[in-house]
Amino acid sequence: MEKGINQFDQKHRNSWLIKKHLYLNSPISRVEIAHDLGLTTPVITGIVSNLLADHVVREVDEPDLVEAKGAGRRRVMLEFNPDRYYICGVDLSPYHTNYVLTDLQGHTLARRQTFRTLDEYSKTMEQLEQQIPDFWEECKIPRQKLLGVGIAMPGLINGSEGKIYTTFKEGWTQSDPAAGLEATLGTRVLLENNVRAKVICAEIFDRMVKSEPFLYFSISYGVAMQMIIDDKVLYGDSAAAGEIGHMVVQRDGPVCPTCGGRGCLEALAGERAVLNRCREAMEKNSGEHLWQLCSSPELLTMDQVLQAQADGDETVETMIQDALDYLGIALSNAVNLISPKAVVIDGRMFRLEKNQRYLLLAAERNMFRVHTNRIQFTFLPFDAYRGARAAAAVVVKDYLYNGIK
View (spheres, rainbow, N blue to C red):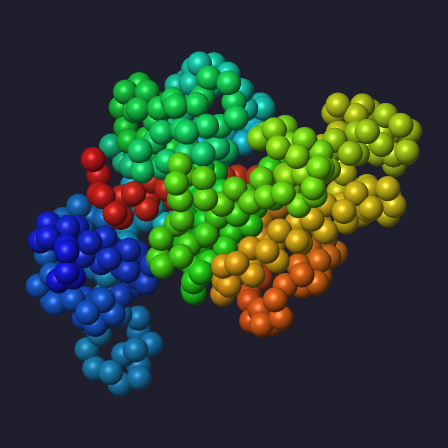
């Protein structure tokens, strides 16, 4: 037992370690779990017995391949039963409200997209109170199989408490939407920052965290970078860790509409910043190709901007490269500070491979040389529903840690 940890805390810690190790490595035997974690067989047996009784874990035979190699009788292996519970994930993105249904292993079984997310707190809550039950009923899954609802959104959010420190939206600061929705929906509701939820999804659902430190760089309407260090997602004080979008990259630069500061990365390189520059070009009649793709600057989308870039529009190309230069500076600063082993990059603009290459070149120009060729950079294929699936991952991680409440 570790010094300073009482028996109850140690039991809870062992339960979390066993469930997480089984979840991430199944099928796996009891003996392998004990060996990997350095725990005794009785400790493993007690916790696994509870999981078997709840039917969340099931016993399966070892694959035939092992038997064919002459290893003798096949061992009994353990694996998570993906159909035991289902999760509803909700993403309150700046563009749309997205819903997904996943099983316990993170497979997406259903999804729905509504119109642009509302800003006003009370109206958003009314929307969620109506649409979440409607979506669940549409999925036709028994109510008792709902493990919980996860909600992801931008802002400084303490996921362990469900409290919002600030979302830069009027009426949301210091609110507790998770508690209100739990009372209305009658099920567990968890709230988390959208990018922090995505790094949890990369860890739990997608098994991408093979080594640490691990960085998740997200470029959307805003810009953020979340990280896993020493097997923990970093929150920092006031849940403000990872807000790299408010790193100053241009002294006395444009005002950031989110935080009010000048020269923030988000104000220069986020999707909102790129869209604003392209709209200004249209208004000045210097974005001819954009006018061919869109009838009005106000209706311009990032997909249309990327189409113009792919079609060879030089004005748009320059704007995208300017944004990538700033993103590359921020990425290199983070790498030089944290010295990660792996970086995952997520953003709509990286649908174009040339933007991927340009970002890495921009980062390498400013990166400490010891990191060159030592870090694994991975670009994720763009998925508008990734945030909603990530919200579901938050619920599963909570279940692995705490169980059903």
